[in-house]
Length: 367
Ligand SMILES: Cc1ncc(COP(=O)(O)O)c(C=O)c1O
Image (cartoon, rainbow, N blue to C red):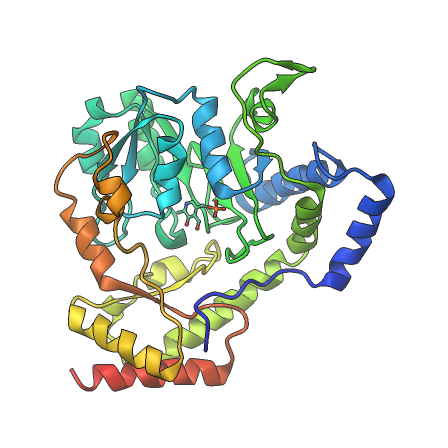
C-alpha cells in the first residue's frame, strides 16, 4: 500500500544525544532546557524567514494551541466563534469544549478560506473568528486583520500544517503532529506579534509563582518532544526542499490533467513560502472521485477525502445546540465533495509516482 502521508521525523541516532542529556538532567517536563531552547530557536527561525518578530508558546498539540489562544481571549460560554464549515474537526472542538457557541461560515469556492464577504455581512453574529489556512495555503492575512480591527473582533488563525511558512495572522496556531511537514509526534505552537502575558501560565494550570492566577490547563510540551523539535529544526530546510521536489514530480506526472484539477495554483506552489503538506486534486464530477477511489483500492494506493464530510455534516455537530450556520453552507459542502488527497510525502519513490499517475489516467481516459 502506498500511504497518503508518511511522517518524516529524525532518526533515533539523531535523538540519542538529546535523550542522554535528559537522562542526566532528570528534567522531563515543566519548561525544561529543551522546551526553552526550542521556543527561542523557533522565534529566531521565524524572524529570519519572515522578518517579523513573533512570540512563541509551545503546546502539546495543535488543538491545545487553539484552546490556548481562545483561553487567552477569555473565550467561554457565551462567546460566539466563527469557524469555516470546511475544516478539520479540531478547529470546532477546541472552542466547543470551552463552552463557546460555534457559528459556521461558508468558504470561498476557489481557495477554501472562510468567506470574507460573508463574515463581514454577519459581523454582529460573532466575537472571535478563526479562519483556517486551508490545506496549508497562505490566508489573505491583511484582509482578515483589517476586518478584525475595523469590526473589533478577535482573530485566531488555524494554520495547522503551514509551519514555518505562514505569516502571522492574529493569534496564529500550528500543529506539529507527526504527519505535518514540521512533525515531532504530537505538539503545537501559538505565535503572536506580542508576548501574551498569560499564555505560558495557561499552559501550566494557570500557575503563577505557585498560585493559580488565571484559567489554565495542562498544555505543556515535554522535554522528549522538545528534543525531537530541536533535532527536526535542523532538518527543516532539507525536509521542505524534498517535499517541494516530490510535489513537483507528482504534478509533472499528472500533466495530462487540466490545470483546474489542482487545488493549489502554481502561484501558491512556486512560492518559497509553502510547506507542501498535501497533494489535493479537484474533480467536479463525483463519478470520477468514485472511480479513482475504486481504482486506488485495487492498485493499493492510499487516498484521503479532505475535509469530508464538512463540519455540519458530522452527526455530533449537526445536532449540537451550540452550533449554528450563517447560511446553507453550500459552497463548502460542494468543495468537500470534489476534493481528494493522493499520496504526498518524502518517501514516495519515482515508481510510486508513476503508479499513481497511471491509475488516475486509467480512470480519466474512461470517463
Ligand atoms: C486545520 C487543523 N486544525 C487543527 C488540527 C489539530 O492539530 P493536532 O492534531 O496537532 O491537535 C489539525 C490536525 O490535523 C488540522 O488539520
